[in-house]
Amino acid sequence: MHQSQTEFDDAFDYYETRHDPSLANELRQLRIRPDHRRRKTEEQILAEIAETGALDGGFNTTYQPSRYEAGWLFDSLRGFFEQDFITDVLAMVKGGKEASVYCCRAHPSTGEKLLAAKVYRPRQFRNLRNDKMYREGREILTADGKPVKKTDTRVMRALGKKSAFGVQVSHTSWLMYEYTTMQRLYRWGADVPRPYAAGNNAVLMGYLGDEAQAAPTLSEVDLGPDEPERLFDQVMDNINLMLSHGLIHGDLSAYNLLYWQGRLSIIDWPQVTFAEANSRARFIFDRDVERVCQYFAGQGVRCDAPSLAEEIWLRHIGDRTEEQALEARLMLDRREARNTDDD
Ligand SMILES: Nc1ncnc2c1ncn2[C@@H]1O[C@H](COP(=O)(O)OP(=O)(O)O)[C@@H](O)[C@H]1O
Ligand SMILES: [Mg+2]
Image (cartoon, rainbow, N blue to C red; front, side, top):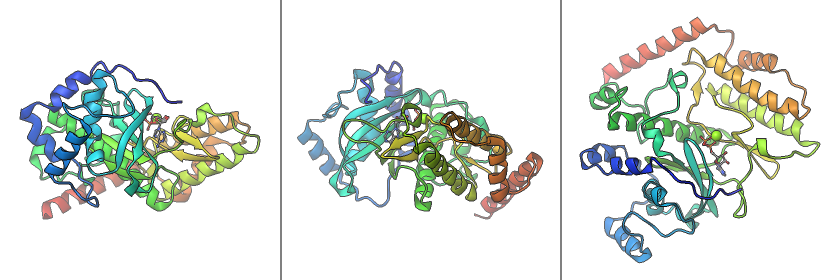
């Protein structure tokens, strides 16, 4: 299940950008500091780095990254090492178009054996997924997971521009939606990996699987005869729980459901959509339900996506047209603008 290392053609430019001294200050401000962890002094970190021989932007890990991958991998994960979340990178689970996921040895203080680090690919910095539809009704989140204030002119000006800083702001926001959504869902008892930390280019979370293999996606497993019904109910329970809080996954399918020890976990959240704030929410929601049903229908579960989606939507959101949704969103915007003016 673990994938061998891949070449990362564009990593080099990214690494260069990250080390452009003219950007260093701005990027530093976007760094994420999980507030509940002790921060080490610079001397401690240097001493540890000297001890492990992790110099020159490289580090000693069981997993041997390719030359181009090493720089950005270390850069993305160093905060997790420094804050004692992880002690080693064991393997690449999957190298995707937008992110690569690594299996890491957890620091004993976390109480876990393994953790999964989702490291966003450098390409993201210049070429975000076509995410316009999902961004509607979402504020920009900063590295601490809070919305950017409209009065922060430096950040507001950078948005929508193709400058390295502007792209970094959008990138951070995209990643922080993944992290903060998982935090909320985990708190509410949804079936998601437990989120541990976020860095400026990576999210650290509970690992599904063991050292020999990572959990397969639902699309990759052969289910036992009595499993489809039960797993379908599990997914529907989660969809209900999410929508009861106004949240829609936005990219739900058998590819973003991990199967481990007879249970499913829902992963891959950066495009999360807010039912109350996005005028396309109903379309996005119906598509999620449709894709889930498509998979389970193939497994012999009797389900009718349109009527299920309608029923769940009416239960949590009510009878609302797209125009009303848009109006609701404009109201939210106006209220937010008033609040910002009051600051
Ligand atoms: N918590 C996790 N534990 C184990 N494997 C994971 C975990 N999160 C992701 N993966 C693996 O990494 C792959 C990519 O993760 P995902 O969040 O779906 O990113 P994307 O699809 O955007 O590349 C998943 O299909 C899965 O195989
Ligand atoms: Mg995915």
